[in-house]
Length: 472
Image (cartoon, rainbow, N blue to C red; front, side, top):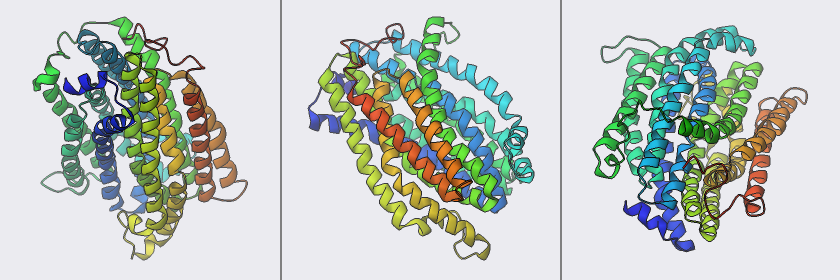
């Protein structure tokens, strides 16, 4: 437990930067690796043609609304474990309780999600999508949906090792999954290696198998490695702990809803693009995939901020809270500048990863995707800022008000502006992306202001934040 022991002695600014980077880089690379799984699917699906790419994008966008909700729910385990370890660095029982009940919550939330996604085609039609695209996307969704439970269980274990400041194990699992997923999806889509040619549904099956293997690999790691096995996470797994189970939902539900607000505005943008045309939707799928890939870096830094702030809060170190938060914000913004420059000045070569730049039938989609990447580059700074601020506030156990602010910014401002600019104002796809950028900027400003007022608002106390006493 050397890493956790180091956290008990609060470092200065230079030490905080070092500690945050040591924690963040495996989280960032794990996020990128996990995003690479989805990117691989998009690239392989794109080889089936623009129509399949549009159908896959439709199904994936609906899927992510629900998977991100499940992930957000079990994210409650990260601050719960970090605050407990900040107070008592050798705590075992309470850490184990949080992990177990996080897994119970994963099972509980997956079942109703499966029932909903099984009716994906009806949902697409209800949202006004093209019937042919909806019919093509539904079979893919029905195979992809089963990946939610193993991935959510994997996320619980990832939060566990991150709170112990040993996230490199999650990185190993995620990186190993990339070639496995690519091979499975390729073989099942195109009928290679003696497997049947399944087209789009094959991508869902391959992804589900990969997620099962990721969870299984993590189970082996935490059961065998001496630094993790002392927690005996799976001993008496069936034993109920209803108070802790309720705590996971009480803390995690606002996180889940906040994430859904954030992700669903992009999904809603995809549905709006679908109303404009299939080319716009295909171009949007490429641009949003690249923007999401870049977002994995500030997201990982925000996750590191949750742990670092939580540890400082647990030990009652207000200066450490300040250092942990602002360090994460600075690192996230520094990366955002580089990502923005890449999107602005190298858009066309990047789009060439997904589509043949020389094919005549792809030219309109390519032009739209390059244009959308310009907008994606512009909002990298505010996107990184809101990701870091959310992580900082979660470290304080502050999840309910950020949820409200997210709803106001993403939907009240972002989505309404996207729809208004795209259709009444006649801006088309550019209007949708302008609205997205504005909504993200609004959320970033409000969350950062809340962080700056944290002491005045009573978010920082000598012990755990109000509402977490029972949870830890």
